[in-house]
Length: 247
Ligand SMILES: CN1CCN(Cc2ccc(Cn3ccc4ccc(-c5n[nH]c(N)c5C#N)cc43)cc2)CC1
Image (cartoon, rainbow, N blue to C red; front, side, top):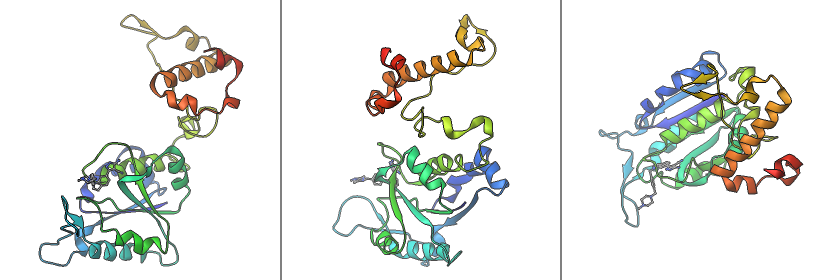
């Protein structure tokens, strides 16, 4: 998968050199290209923003630098088109389902903005030729889109074949389709069996895989009911067995 990111703060993406995503880049699974938007701002001050038409607070990012920057990225492979992803507080929710959809794309272009966002004509221009998604990573306000891109690149990158070892399959993720869909993971434990008077639940030491699986699902249901009751309401009743219903 190729990923391009255009930003006035490309240094925000240093974390993409480490850990899981860094290793995926080293192994050629992910090919990430960072671009400094100001390279396409040709005035002496490399200006990328201006006052909003119609008045109002803050500044808006000018269309010209973005247009030239995106055109340059598109020219990297004229025979293909990336899916353009625009982080914005007013976007559709970024979900595990959307992460899985993006993980199937060969090329993603992220356009994290600053200020009040990008002149709307930019995405109108490209939206007439390719998929442009306005996406929000959560119901809170960030200062710009870079952190949102880090979130999305990690959530998508970990789903790519070969990135997670078999032992850490994403299949069991919360929110992933299947038995755990819409369920939060339950508690996890490792050695030692007793720590500061806290013992590991006996069932987990029993070696009885069926009972362990049952216990884990019970704990997942309990945690989901405690922390995200609305997810339980969204559970397909068909996926609940008679034991679940007794909880
Ligand atoms: C007067 N009011 C008029 C409305 N604005 C709304 C507003 C406009 C921009 C910004 C800052 N910003 C700039 C680019 C950018 C991209 C993503 C996000 C973002 N925030 N939260 C998410 N989940 C995000 C994601 N993904 C924020 C961004 C913050 C708030 C405030 C002032």
